[in-house]
View 1 (cartoon, helix red, strand yellow):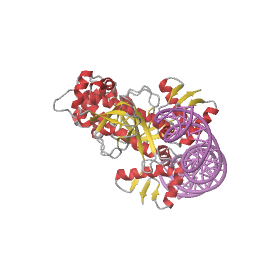
View 2: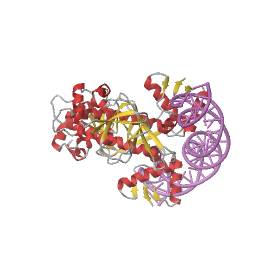
View 3: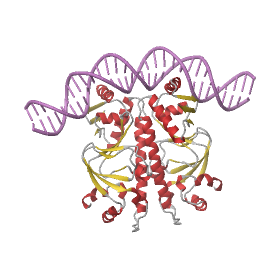
View 4: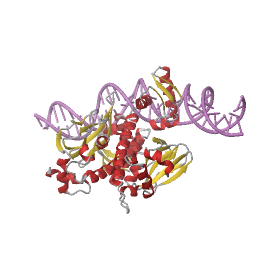
Length: 219
Length: 219
DNA sequence: AAAAGTATGTTGAAATTTCAACAAACGGAG
DNA sequence: CTCCGTTTGTTGAAATTTCAACATACTTTT
C-alpha cells in the first residue's frame, strides 16, 4: 500500500493523519485496491452501498441512468477524491447511481462500517475520520448546489453560460479546458447534444466565446 | 428552552442525547430562538454561513434565486429538521441559497463553531454531534440525488410523473397530498407553471391520475 | 354573504428543444 | 501516411416549453 501513500495523504478522508498512522489504518479499514479498464462499472446501481471508494489513479464518473437509458452525469471523480461515501455512511440498501471508469483506473475500497464503528484494537482515529467525512460531505453538498444552480436554468444557452462562467471562476481565468466531451457535457447539463453544439457555435459567432473542442476562452 | 425539548429530541443532530444533556448543551452551543412571519427571510443569500438552523414550528423553504429573479426551490424544511448545516460546516463565506419562512415559524440557530470545536468546559458531546451531522449530511445528499433524478427528466410530463411516483413511494400509498402549490411545484421541477397545470389536466383526462389541488391519486 | 385577493386551469402563438440524419474534423493504429 | 472509428458540427422538421393573457375556482377578510 505504501506506493499509494502520496495520493492517500491528499485524500480529504485522511486530513490530519500522518503517513505512518495512515498506512497502519488501512488494514484496519479493510482496504483493498481494484483495477478497472475504461468504461468498466466500478459500482452498479441497485447494489447495497457498503464501500467508500477512493480514486488512486485515472478517473471515475458518477452517473444516473433512467428506465429509458437516458444518462445523467453527476460528477467526475479524480485522484485522491472520495465517491459513494454518502451512500455508504447512510447504509443505503440500493445504490441510486452507477460509477464507471472514465479511463483505466485504480480504485481503493474501504469498508464503511470499519470507519464508523470503533474497532476491536481500539485505534483512536475513528473520531478524526468521522470529522473528515463530515467535512467532505459538506463540501459535496455545496458542489450539488452548484450543479443545481446550473441545471436549473431553462435554456441550453443559459445552462452552458452558467457552466462556463463557473469553470472560469474555478480556475481564475477566462481561458480553460473542460472535463467533459460534448456528449458528456450535454448529459451533465441535461440538454440535447446537437442543440448544445449549435448553441456553442452561435455564441462563437456572436463573439461571446472562442473554443476548440474542450478548450474555451470567454470574451 | 424546555418547551422545545420534544421537537429537539426528534432532531437528527441530537440523536442519542438525552433531554437533560440536550438542554444543558444548548447554551454551550449559543442557541437562540427567532420568530419569522410568512414570507420573511430567515437567511439571505450572500451572507457568511455561521449558523445551523433548526425548524421548531412552521416550515421553511430553501430557494435559489438567479440574476433574472427566477426561483428554484430546493426543499421544504419541517419541524425538527436542520437547514444550512452543510454551509455552516464548510464555513462557506457566502450562502448560495435563501431560506424563507413558508408560514409563521420559530427557528433555532446554533453557532456551528461551537459544535465543531471542543469548548472550554470540555463537555463530551462534540463527538456525538459531529457523528450526527455526518449522518444528516449523508441523508441530505441522498435527497439531492432524488431531486436530480426527477429534474433530470427532459419533459414536464416525465418530471411530474417521476415526482408523483416518488411521493407515492414515500407514503406507501397511491393517494397522497403534496407539499407544494402549483407555482412551487413548477419551481421545484424547474418547469413552467401553466405547462405543468396543462400536463396535470392531460394526465387526468388520460385516466392516469385523479387530483384536486394538492391531493393526488395515481391510478 | 359579498368582496377582494390568491391559486389554478386554459388557450394559442412564439421560442426552444429534441430528434434523426449526415457531414466534417480529429486521433489512434497499423 | 492512410484508414477507420469516434467526436463534433450542422440542418430542418416535429415535439415541447414558455409566455402572456384571461377565465374560473377557491380562500380569507370584513
